[in-house]
Structure formats: structure tokens, C-alpha cells
Image 1 (tube, one colour):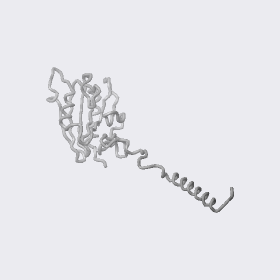
Image 2 (spheres, rainbow, N blue to C red):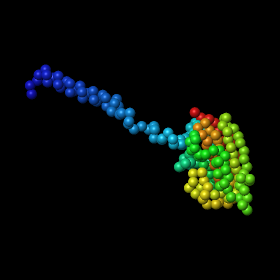
Image 3 (cartoon, rainbow, N blue to C red):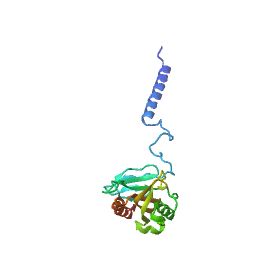
Image 4 (cartoon, rainbow, N blue to C red):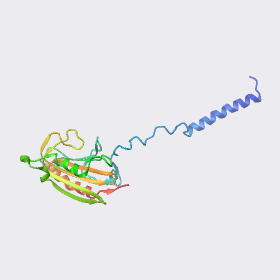
Length: 215
């Protein structure tokens, strides 16, 4: 092909376009606003999972410090956090602390949940669990807290998020705590054989009473 000034301009123009396309690709110009991202995989309405930070376990704007001897099982389903303690001598099952959070305006009121927990215990001779339940309140970093506890036969989960309706387990204790956090209530539920729960109960109460607002 005969070399002319016109051909030179054509070759120079094509080469420039090629070089510009390489620079644009190297700078990431090929990704649009609709590209994939690590953020945004959780919908705005979904309850945030608990995570561990230097300030402790944080969930829904509340930080708390689980005891070192509790086995941290992580979140599962509606349980935003789960902890276990091996059974003490004489008990056949571990103690369980399950933490629930349903969002700022979900999960029902405080009293409704305390009553639901009470209703999961069966007392001898048909005694009224509501009359036998022990109740208490506390304040942690300006957040109101509520406690309910009682012994009896526990109606285990049966697949329900907050428990109840499953197998009836005698010789159990239930301790339920509601913390009214800045982003909605957190529900801490301790259940298990009596002696094991009695070993965990002081730790649970210390943990929730030392909870603090985070973020």
C-alpha cells in the first residue's frame, strides 16, 4: 500500500482510540453504578446479625460481653446470637442463651414476650406459672431492662423462633431478659437443666446489666 499523509492520519487515529480504551479499562471505567458490591446484600428491613468487635458483641446498637467460658455458636435463623455452656455435673443437657432481635417495631411488646416465656413453663399440679414467676427490672446505660425467671418443665422450641410448643423437659429453669435498645428490643433467653442454668444466670445478668449503647 502506498504510504500517504491521509493513511498516516488514519493509522494515528485508530492507535489513539486503542490506547485510550486501554487507559479507560485500567482505571475501572467499565463498571457502572449497577455493578456488584459487597455492601447492600442485606435488605434494609432485615435484622442485623450480631458481630464481635473490640467493644464486645454488638447487635442493634447494643454492645454486650459474653463470658469467656460460653461457647459462641453464632447466628442461626431468627437467633441473632447463640451461646452454650456444657452441663454441670448431674445435668444431661447444656444451658442455652439465645438472643433475638426482630427490628425496631417488630417482635411484640415487652410484657407480651415476658408472658410468652412464662407460658412455656409447666408447673406441678397445674399451678399458675405467672404467679410463680419472679420479675425484676434494671437500667443499663439508660436502657430499660426486664427480667423474668421460674423453674418447672420447659416446653422446648418445636421449631418456633422464640421457643415453646415442643417436647416438655422436666427439671428446667428459664430466665428471660428484654433490653429496650436504641434500635428496638433485644430478647435474651436462657434455658436448660436447673443446675446448669443457675451456673449461667449470674453471668447472664451481669452481661445484660453492663450492656451499653454502641454507635
